[in-house]
Length: 383
Image (tube, rainbow, N blue to C red; front, top):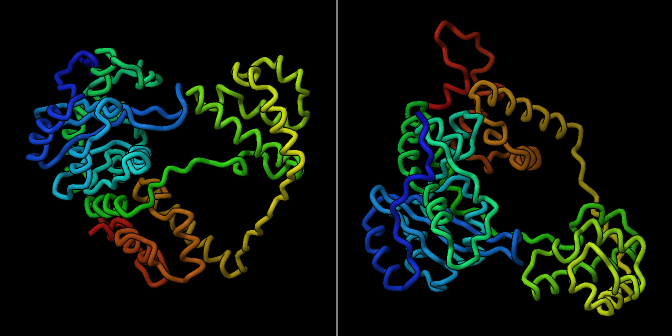
């Protein structure tokens, strides 16, 4: 019988420095802590920033109110402590927002999604894994909620804390399965490389919008001015940029710039656009007078020999992926193949990747006829 994760919750809500210090005393004694974040990411307000951080040990759970506390040094100390493992699910965005807002780099990471990937699982979401291993159904009703409002509803807090409740137990199971499959060393390498990766939160500019290269120089000039003004207005009214003016509408305005009167009466935009119509109109006129040429950067093409080598490694990636039932991009991603082709070296591969790939190259074991019970080349490389 399935139970609803939403119905169970014991936690401590931390919104004072004294409570934070007390919580830190407890989690600093642990070997592992499950962690999840709730953020604002241009959904209800302007910008991307943390709202709460949920932490769980085997016996305790906390919800740290980042907006109330401001100074959360004990949490940063935990993130950067190499002796305590931090367990996340799908850690990518979490590490970006932690780096962007807190200027912190997390050490000693276990990502349950990466572990599931390496085990060849098809359904990688936390909800799917909780259902598979614990027969628990994860609620989704607050996924689009505004986590910046205060006070937070008790129901929202209880929903948030559940994502960390099972992370340590899930880690235990996945780690055991990885060791049984002789893939634990793979996981360790994958987790370790997360620490040295660049986790800058990239905020796309006006020149990265789809269709930018198709515009005329004058239209690009207008786009730049409207884009920058939209950012300023969105920040002032504390609303996502698309609430001020959608990108699609912005491109419409670039094609046929409205008159001042039309801006004053414009529908389908935030009221600030109509209130400050003259500012918007002048931005468009300024853009017309500041055209931007498109700087086309030619892509260096492979030589015939390099194309052949790239095809060879793509084929190897597919074969290994099929044999081990893991995604091809984990075996060899496009950037790694490109690096091999251009440098002739495998320095960009992790040790486990290199061992497996070498078995498929000429001189490896892939050409031998397998005997009964003989492992595949990829499986041999798991030793």
